[in-house]
Image (cartoon, rainbow over all chains, first blue to last red; front, side):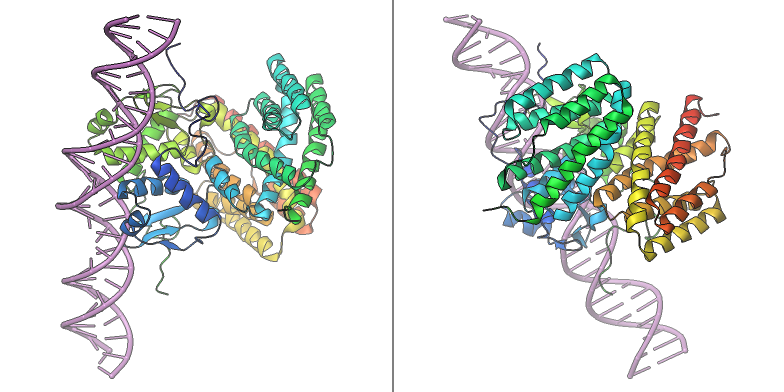
Length: 255
Length: 255
DNA sequence: ACACATAATATGTCGGAGTAAATAGGGAGA
DNA sequence: TCTCCCTATTTACTCCGACATATTATGTGT
């Protein structure tokens, strides 16, 4: 096995070293800083990031590093640069909010309650339909992954990172069983938000309800190949999550 | 009004000048080339883009331009670079397929039939739910935009770009009426794909069915505030589109 | 099998030349 | 005198190539 996988840093790599920071590269760090600043509203749409040179000096980095960071932000639709005019923050509807990295920036600070709600609403739309498709298309390998994830959830509970990872695995397995690339990509984006909110809920209060039985119902329906039952079971699951999130966010987290 | 808006090029700017090309910047052009090459399968996941310097020389550009292009691709999850190891194409599930630019690259060459199907399947999931929400939350301004778009569709038909733009406007108006940011961003991505496929269908054969009455039914239900009827009407609309697309893609376009 | 040295390669830095565009200024016409 | 248009300057992004650094794959020796 001479061919080492690339870019598995955060998953299996050496967790001791670079677990700290935003981005391991310099321009990555710059992009993270500017990205969070934009997402948090420090720079509003229409604002201008004055001067390549000025910014590079202020951040004590070379112009190249700053430029590459700007390229990243441009690629994600956050800013646009034009000669003489400067680099401006684009209107919000141009932002690539489903980009996992942008999502991370959105949740780095104080996330917008309304936006979180919209994400969970989207999830409540997509996941039941995904469960329906999964019930029709899953094979034995899919079911095994779901079963294992379920077992891991039971063991670790959602209070631990391992438990949340198992939860993600379960939902990802369902998405994977749909055999739909677009759905899978979407799930990767939403998953990050859900995970964040899950630990947010942990901070605010104990889980008001044991989520395991609901997950089991979804699994049983998918295993049985009952599309409608799977959709319905997933429906109650995501509706509960949406409700929990709403109540958890209206009252600020106890400091 | 001294403050000119930035980056309105494709919408209202001077359409005479830069309507031609992939990207107006050099690194944008490089990114476009590499992006299409990756999406078309010329570079498969795991392949290595050998050598920063070698590539820069081959493309006759400076390393900076090449580097900035790589930053863009990295930001979209297509590639990852590590010292000594080179820049490798990431596995497909890491790609940001919902990014509008990536979507454009995917459709620049011969788009993957399976992927197009997955996009339309996603659309068939999302849009009916969006219509349901729109019926509950729309206001008079939303309805006016939909009505206007409908009139424009009637006038221009889907064979013209103006007609397709009206179609997009209609669907975007529905998404906007959901008051859901995540849905709107998603629609922006899907819209590009739908538009592309619409003109694809034009090339292959005449539209087998007049889409106007179906759209009118959706509008009426939303205007009436009947959520279930809106969802159902949209359902038949997107199901037809899915079906049309499937049949249009199985047989290659007549050259 | 393990540890170390080497070499290859990407990353970060720098300053300068080129270029596009917005603003300001001047000239012509009403 | 006022308005409009054209030109010129200035400003900021864009591109370039070279240098320095850090990291790590690979080979070598024990």
